[in-house]
Length: 278
Image (cartoon, rainbow, N blue to C red; front, side, top):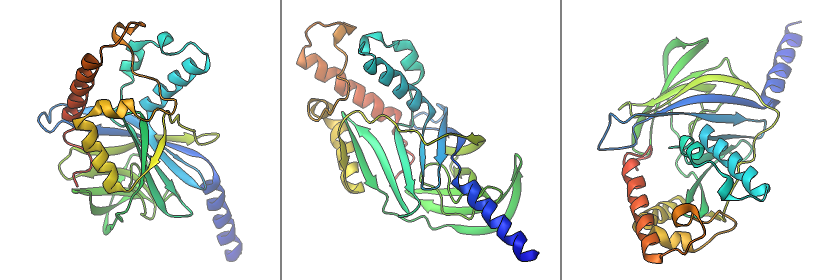
């Protein structure tokens, strides 16, 4: 009877793991190094299937859905409500995909008109603690790690059969319910979860370029210095920058370059305290 009970439990865990589940995290960030009182909060999804998981912004998903409907309907950018799009602006412009079979983590981010993808090359070395507590309905255990220039504390639960978590975090004996850096500048808190029919396919306007992590960082720096060159090259179907005044008038290349550079500088300032410092 004992063997039958163990087998039944194993089959149940296998069935649960094969289902598609969405875990909603509240992400709290202080991305501006000069203004730590400017706290950004938004939701992000961790979708888990039997083969992989995908972490991405809720707002980004909503923005992509609006763009896709507009362009599929043939009406283009003119039909898009700009106020609605501004309201869905996200500080989480990347996606993180974890492949369970290959044990790889792929990071995707847009630079200019293209998507740059690299495979994470730094392992997460967790230090397990015997300390436990309760967060919401879950009994959780503490673990710590140093990653990308920050010291992180995670709380994971074995009540959920997933060795996964938000962002690039994972590899613990259960699902990460909360993870926060020691400065309190970034935190991910599990809010709720529910079943989904299948993992989403996010829109990837533009070319997808696979690079090493070091090359991705170099491209980031180049974009900050000369964003216009990134918008002129590539393409791959990504919507062109809106024309001045939103209409079909001629664009002055010098004015457009200046606007692009100013926008890139503003973006760099808003993200001068990134989640990864190294």
